[in-house]
Amino acid sequence: MVVEFNQLPDSSRVWVFQSNRGFSESELEEIKPMIEAFLKSWTVHGQALKAGFEIRYNRFIILGLDESQANASGCSIDASVHFIQSLEKEYNVDLLDKMNVSFKNGEYVAFKPLLDFKKMVKQKAVSPQTIVFNNLVNTKAEYKEFWEVPMTESWHSRLL
Image (cartoon, rainbow, N blue to C red):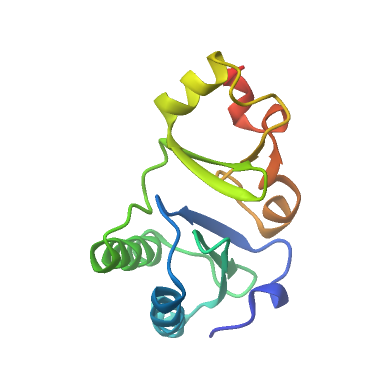
């Protein structure tokens, strides 16, 4: 069952997939119905899952799952990964590599491989207050509170 992302409870589990590039408006017009179709068919042991999604900054796909009805299983998580892999192939993007960093450069969202971002930290091209995207958040509450934060409040602080 697909619901609006903002209607999911804060306890909902989330997965954040960041793209190595922004999607165009025409790509988003294609991608949104594809995600909705996937979520409509997403099940765990034959039971429909209550899920929603949002796309932020034309770059991040966030899937949310209300686990109060049914928890995601290994098979249902695998299905979501296969779906994301299909988007990667269709749009020639990288959505699953966790060794990349997205951060704000003014109002612009920048993307760098982790090694390049480490160099930027050493060169002081980014500061401890640079806004980074902590894609390791697990729940909607964490996503709302700790996804878009200064580097000092994220795992990125290890790089300082």
